[in-house]
Length: 250
Image (cartoon, rainbow, N blue to C red):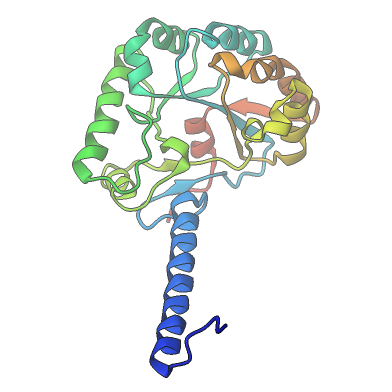
């Protein structure tokens, strides 16, 4: 029994099919790398870490605000005596405006994490503008008056989002340390602390998720994490403060 056709035309068709499959797979892989890249995008500025000589680090918390853990997280940050940057979604901020007001009143920086938290990759310019501007307006209603930086949902971006941010003189803010993104690390507060201490460098931006019910270990890690990094000589700043401390663009 023959497995492959014997005619030249049939064999050529199989070869072309295999080549097309490989090309498509490589293209999809390359696109995925580009969409998720922490250090590259086609338009405007992107920051995943700031090159600074001093031991400074920015703690950032994505998603929410959610009633399950926001107050506990704020209490932990108050106990630690640090200001963080909260990348909030407009949809949840609209549902819980009191929590947004409480975050702002505690002296933290509020960042924009889109309205719906949908992946902003193959989207129109109008969708990007609506997602960002609607959330900006909700952030301002909290009483926050500082700079509003932007972080893409799931860190994904391609064309329309970076172009909008560039046109409005805003950077894409990513991260270089993400301890609670790994299930084995996030399984314990000590794991989160250990991973962060091992990975952090001067100018690091640390991504955490602490406001949902399932993120109890992140909330438990805040105080010991701050204590250990302070013991290593680090001090804590917001993202906008970190950007201001970096080299001036040419």
